[in-house]
Image (cartoon, rainbow, N blue to C red; front, side, top):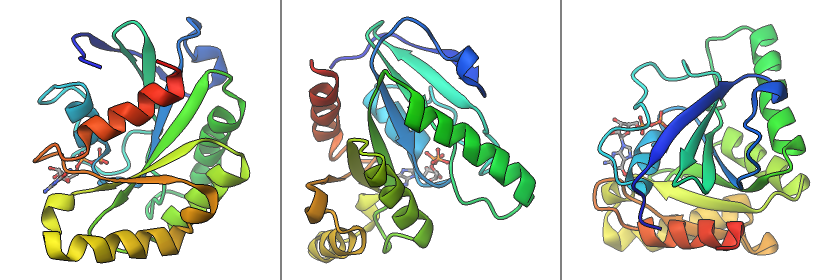
Length: 196
Ligand code: GDP
């Protein structure tokens, strides 16, 4: 999809605030700083549309970006906060959980993981949770330009194994916001999900 128009139409904390147009939605999840804003910016051909977070974990709303009056990218705030209270964390977890389990128009979730490392425990939990709820998931390994080409296969094996991706036929795409490697493949997956 060649994107010309993107607009942040809503920052929601509860279902009553979700958009009602019925456009299909793709959720984006991952821990803070994994490169979610950067991926979004590459997908929509902007240098800086989605805010690049200067304070990790600050954004605690579901941000609905309307793309080409056809679909929404929903930025689901990053998991794995060290600094917030248990109570705050629980409230925040409920917001994410409500969205991911109850949103009828959600067609799939892109889970971002840092391509330089093994998936963290939080990454594994998130992925297992998405599987448990049968949510179509794409794993995108970010910052892959920082991984030498000769080592990438090893990273792919490690990610496949740690998340047990083969068992559920989950696709893994290596991505770089710098070189734009993987951009077309990510779009292809999105278009398949939304039936375009
Ligand atoms: P977010 O918190 O998940 O939205 O992460 P950002 O998109 O703000 O990225 C966090 C940091 O990682 C920033 O300094 C980005 O420039 C950097 N970053 C993101 N994606 C890439 C990538 O593909 N390659 C490299 N080298 N750096 C990246």
